[in-house]
Amino acid sequence: MDKKVLDQIASGHDSSNVTQTLIKKGNSLFCALNLSDSIAGVVLLALSLVVLCGCLVLMVKLLHSMLKGQIAVVIKKTMNRDYQFPYSILVNYLAILVGCIMTILVQSSSIFTSALTPLAGIGVISLERMYPLTLGSNIGTTTTGILAALAADSSSLKDTLQLAFCHLFFNISGILIFYPIPWMRWPIGLARMLGNITAKYRWFSVFYLISMFFLLPLTVFALSMTGTWALVGIGGPVLMVCFIVIVINIIQHKRRSLLPLKLQNWNFLPLWMHSLEPIDELIAKLVERFSCLACCAGTQSRHDAALSALSQQTNQSQLHILGSLNNSNSSTQLKHIYENDGYILHWESVRLNQELNDKQVTNL
Image (cartoon, rainbow, N blue to C red; front, side, top):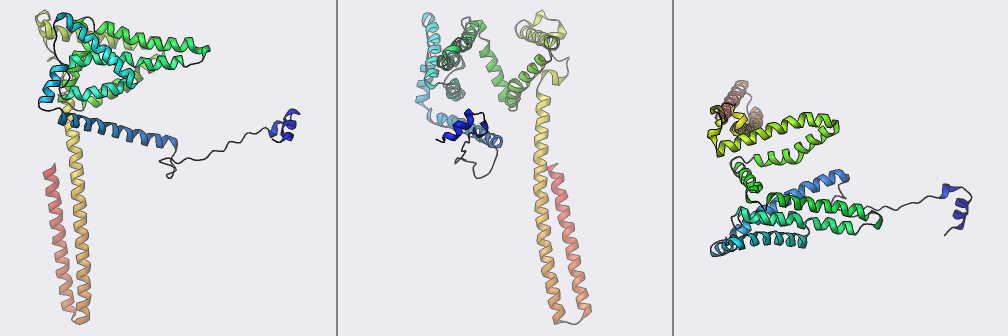
């Protein structure tokens, strides 16, 4: 250690108090590409989503190929078995406990539900049996926050535990509302309804994810930032309209005769306000239009390639003409060869353009 540096710091000359850090670039996947951290993070996020979707698709195919025949019958009978009254209640709450324990073991509710989703998709586990397992996983996932809160400093232990227990009791209160009373198990019916809509309109899943996870939270956040009155003035009427529509839909399905004749169905409204068919037709037309443009682009590229080949043939013909010029001094013969070659080139171009127009008309 250099004692002069300490003397300079003690005497007030702290210009020498400089700490230099040696930063060495590590061997990463993108070290040779000179990408920034943001771009590398976006690339890794896209790759991870592709890998995740691929793993889920392959998992479904693998489970579907394995759980066939007598094995599938035995598993379905075991998992979806209906018990008598006293035991049926215990089995459902036991499923909540199993979901909680399994989530604690894997430390993630996403892993547990991702493993259950393919099983429910191929019919091994019913939706009614998967529901308590998912509720139990919501309780098990709170243990990670509790353990992290216990590892905090003693000065902030109270606040961290309070936050962790808020998460725990929030999930428990949701279970107490939507599970013990059978007719309060709305998530099962809502999940089945969304599944039926997604099976008919495949684009609805993307729309649901974007709207529920991005657009709706951003809208509520923006309204809350503008002030309480803006949130109440805009959000209140929207919630009131949604509540009235839900009540009318329930009455239409349960007791339609209680409603006026005009409100017994939504046919008095425009079609796009009570059906997804117009949006589905619009998306289908857009997809067809883009596929048609891609096909036309391919036809245009083939046409350009044909013209390129024709120009090469023309160059070869011109070389043949020059050779004939060396072999013959007759200007009349040379003129005749040029005229024939130009005639062939003209009609070949006309033929290719006609084929391109016919293909475009067929695609449209």
